[in-house]
Length: 216
View 1 (cartoon, one colour):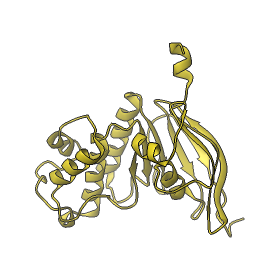
View 2 (cartoon, rainbow, N blue to C red):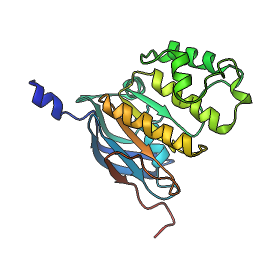
View 3 (cartoon, helix red, strand yellow):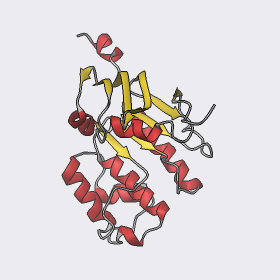
């Protein structure tokens, strides 16, 4: 494959992707693609399956049907988990561990590159919190710690579920900077946002899941 053909291969591609719970469809079938340097905003009402879609793409839930490709290759749940970094509603770290220890644990578990731990904490505004247990941090500080964990993973695909939640204006600006940097490095971002939050200030395509059960 020549360089131009390789560049045309999407980082993420879904074909006929669907999910059902107790034999009731939640979303799909969906067809979409996301290239390196691109952001995709998932929209839809409550119950439309936005969080579920991200969890399927993170390898946390099994799809009911369809195929997902990463960088042109069909993948299963294990490979989805390796190729993506997931930020969900829960911070995803251990409450009794300090900030630096949580990041060290995550790096040992997932591997990764990027900045060192102290630099990653400073980047998200948590310098000086290295030894503070996560349980003693506010919801916004825990979100910042989760964002630092993203920076330490080498996954090309970021899956961000409500990344602006629990953040003040400085925190929202931080998310935007991290998204812009990741796209600039050739990564891709798929995210959901609540109606109260704007999408990041980058070119964003949209994927609509609709409508939730009980909605017109």
